[in-house]
Length: 294
Image (cartoon, rainbow, N blue to C red):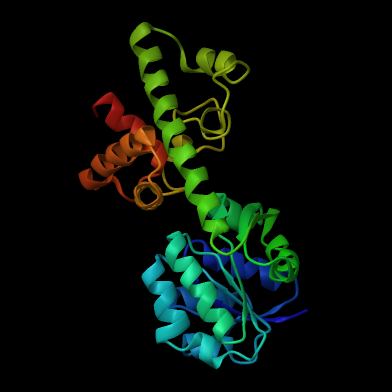
């Protein structure tokens, strides 16, 4: 078992760190929020006084932070790369822009470290249950080192290619998710106006050409998919503000690369309205309420 530094112990990072503890690793955890550190310590982690202290003596470092600016600040500004032993593996699990991910890979290489960008899909439930999907960018050697560690926090660990390709996969995946969720919500609202029962539409479409994860697993109305947030007053899950963040990252990448993504742009605009209406902490499937007009 390894000593693992874990930086970012929030809604996702906290349960991910706990799964590493359950697997028998020693975890040195740091977060700016004391309550998050306290929860990790209660689960068996050791509290670190800073990001640099969290990596001291660690063979592997996992970061799970809100945005690219935070990742850059921790790795470079707070000295995590400088404080780590040569050859330490950094597993960067935050969802950030591709350009920053590639910049961090270059900084890690210059510091004598190995790195993968490994954003995740599966939300807080997946983090708690260790059923996340990891989309991993980096060299073959770095991926081979990261795979068993990620596998203790998730059910699928997939090598997406070179530096930054994990982030590329994540923003493309979540653009699909954002677009399909809006389509499912619109269809269910249309069914309501036509007098078609939600369950009947679910029974038909989940076994027909309308079948998709947004309907089958995460159905945005109560009943058909018992584990979906719709059955818990749209408590996240995956918060709408996080979906908007990912859709904005996809749009930035599309503009930089000259890719046409009109449906992605429309989804970003709709989630922008939803979040700006005070619903940022609602599960992203709760956008059905806005589509209904309530």
